[in-house]
Every structure is written in C-alpha cells, then in structure tokens.
Image 1 (tube, rainbow, N blue to C red):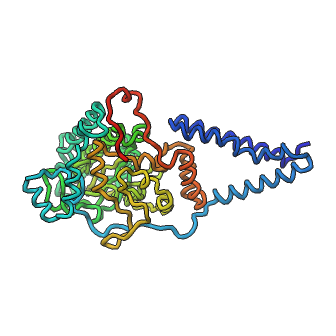
Image 2 (cartoon, rainbow, N blue to C red):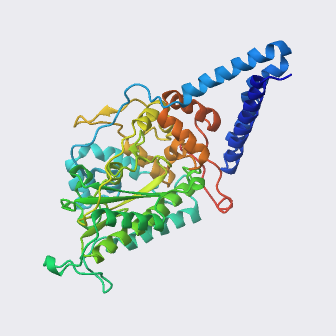
Length: 475
C-alpha cells in the first residue's frame, strides 16, 4: 500500500510536469516556438525523479520517495530563498553633463562643407574618420540600405515626422490658453489654493498612466541630467540653461512582437511610434502644468535638454545595464522615455538601485555577443575619465551599422532576457533573479538553453511579410 511519502512524491511530480507544460504553453502563446518545444521536451525529464519510486520494489519506495522529496526541498531552498549573495556591484553616478554636440545623433546631422561641420571637426579631429565611415553608408531609412522595406521605412519616417510636429509645443508661457485654470501671477494673494506636492504628483502620474505610460517617476533635476550645450535644432551650440527643480520621467512599452524582428524595419517602426507616444504624453503633461500657472518643458526626440535614461534611473524607474539603456524591472530595456521638467512642486521618488540587475548583466553578456557591430563591451564596467564606474558603448560603430542597415537595429533589446513579456511566468523569473544569487546564475543558462544564445530575428509579421525587404547583412 502506498505511503504518504510515496503519494506526496507522485503529486509533486505531476505538479512539476504540469508546471513545465504550462510554461511551454505560455511560450507558444508568446510566439516563442523554440522555447515551447524545449520546455515541452523538458516536462517529462523534470518529473522523472518523482516517478522513480514507481519503478522500484515496494520495500524501497518509501525511502527513495523521502530522499527525492528532501533533495527537491533542498534545491527549492537553495534557489528560491531570498539569498542575494555577496556584496553586489553598483555603477557610479556621473559628475557632470554631456555636450550634446558630441553625440552621434548630433554628429550625424552635420553637413559637409558647412561652417558648423568645419567648426566641429576642427575642434574634434578624432571624430571625423569614424563619422565619415558612417556617411559612406546609405543612411537611416535609405532606400539603398541593406534592410530596406518600403512601407516599413515610410511608416517609420511618418512617425518621426509627426514627432517633429510636436516640437513647437514643447515650451510655452505659463498660464497659456483660454482654458488656463487660475493664474499664479506675481502676487501670491491672487493665487488659488494649490494642492500639495504629493497630491499633484499623484494626479500627474495617474494621468500619464491613463494615457498609456508604462511607468512614471519624479526626481530632483541634477546637473548631470542636463546636456551642457545643445546639439540639435535651432539652439545648436547654445549653452543649456534650465533651472527647473523637478523632472518627471515617463516610459512607454515597445511592442514585443515588433522588437523580436530586430534589426528588421518592424523594430524601427516600433521605436518611432513609441517616441511619438511618449512625446505626445510629455507635451500634454507640460501644457497641463503651464495651464496651472507653472513653467514646464517637454523633452522629446530631437529636442532633449536632458539625458533621459539618467533622469529615469534617478526617478526610480530602473537601472542602466550593459547596453547603456534603462533596464526597467518588468520590461527591461524594451521602453522609450520622455521627460517633463518643471517648477511645479512635486513629491520626489528618488532612485531605487537594483544591484541584482547589474550582477545579471555582468554574467549574461548576451547583448554584447549578439550585437552585430560589436559596440557593446563584453567585460566588466570600467571607470571613465571622471572615475565613474560604467559600461561605455562604442557609439560610432553602432551608428555606422544603423546607416548600413537603414534601421536602428535594436538587436540588443530583442535578445535581453529582461525584455520578455510582462506575464506571470517571466515575473516569477525576474523575482528569482532579484532575490537569489543561485537562481540568477541559473537563469542566464536557462535563457540560453530555451531561447538560444544568439537567437535569429523572427520573420516579419504577417501584415508585413509580403512587402519587399533587403537581405540581412549585419554580421
């Protein structure tokens, strides 16, 4: 007659089998066919130890069942108890701002033969050779690019054009518009009673989330958040003078199905559209604040005065990972960011450091190994010229690849284990990564096993697959 230990082992085996099958089903729903096949194949092996007593003589079933359960219990304790391990590495905080003219987004718009072109490379001669190499390539969204997709490139260009249409509205006078609510004015006695900073922060966050934001956070605006000199638009070459004390960071989710096609044009279209969505949210929030009688500026694609990932990190929305992008807890780097700066008194969230994410990046290295241009460092973070510990991306080689492919690549984002869908399965894995150092190490290996160390880009979505596209020449 079966004993309690034998029955418990059998029940646990069934539970393990069904759990792994459920994970396979979730992967299938996500469109991860390889992961679904591998997990389905692992369901039986994972349950075999618990079925082992069935194959043994009755006299030995009980001791073996107890041994299997004890071993399973030890493994569960080792991998799931909150044991973060030894002291984890934390990256540094910058000590100064950056001249936006030195970024590749600014340098790519320099036109040969113009005074601005000559002046920049006279002051920065080392930048000319790599920049010229990019200029020899077809260019972003070019019909001659390796991954040209006529309709996809057209839709991406249209999204960025719509972002440009928002740019006249990123700044304005406070109290503008007939619908303005109250007038702060110069005389405090004329002001209507104002909600507390906590109340206003709750309102702005709630409105942003209702508009479709993934996450919202508030930070004090720090000097290193700011570009020192503007590098794009009509203010090129002017010192950045922004005295707003607060910054609101907004993230929006990039579509997982489209990012999975990186570096094809679907990923660029997802990027452009989320720049548009986040920009529209920031413009609306800034205008709302101005109508309440305070100053506010929206920082959107092409017209930033702040370095958005640094603001978002200090607002508690994530960490900066190996690839230099904001790593959010639930979506990893699969977000775009916009910022609103203001003098409206707000309740500050402050940073929420997560050294476990940095530790995972140290061990994973998948983004670096899968990067077609090898622009992401494979080693540990290093101190920069200011003594700040960080990973530094080779922006020149990254941008040269964009110019050759005609897309903004996003391969690093697509392969990052943190970029998986925000569902119960992956939330559980992220919980394990955050709380247990053995789980964190095992998760790197399991992600490689289930999804592949260098997963190829998925074929275009059905509504794009009949359209012409170029050959992938990223290797």
